[in-house]
Image (tube, rainbow, N blue to C red; front, top):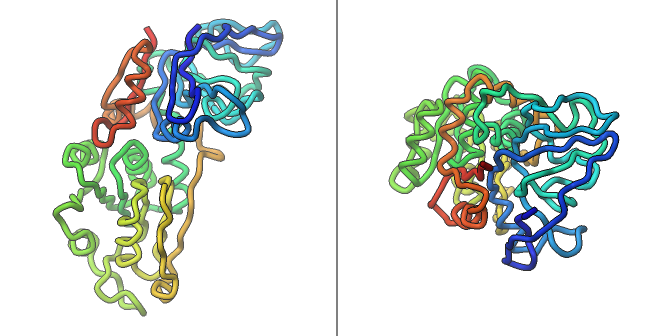
Length: 338
């Protein structure tokens, strides 16, 4: 069968691999959809992911159907539709340096443990929406890391998939007012459709001034003069200008959570922000959130579906990767299997 594989620096190719064998405690999955992540392009640029040597299979945002099981396998049934914890495979991270990737027709879950690698989903949930489970868990973890709570005011920088997912999770947490900041009007329109209370086009608007209009002035405190009353900042954009804006804008005691991957160093003057007591938190992956977010996707499938901008068939997976890596060309690209 064909597998989309990193074969060298900046080189992704189709590679023929054997169909997986099913051991006594294994579960065989037929991949039905797999999202393209920004990290796929990063893996390709690196020429693969250590410690794996040589070719690195891609695809870590899958949804699948159970098509075979070993005689001792339990926890799922043939015909079940499932989402997958790609970080809990025993042969390495699925699509992120492990032995297998989900941009291929079949994947085997070795030594399946009930409730660990797989979560059964309703069969009426569209495959391309189910494939959002992994990135939405990343977004949900960022919200959890922020400790956003009912009544807070928040701003999300970046209206890509993670930013949009964080917006949905913030509103689900009861956050009173969520603003999304981006430079693309089409993305800002989607942000409003998924639940943002307001949007800011930072290419033409003063972010700090608009936040004061939307969230009011911060209460009187040392260092709060002329700053908005925003409680939570989430950087889902990964550009230095976002950090500069937050440092110049955040009130005393605000929280900045960063799930974005910054590809270049960002200069921070800690002396200048000392009196703000700004709480800076990094956010990586989904330690507990991979199946926490599944119920939200099931309950709000139409809203999450708006995050997907393109679906391409499996035989166009290389084109899907190129589309997803082209700045401004797409939001979430999902490969679907016929």
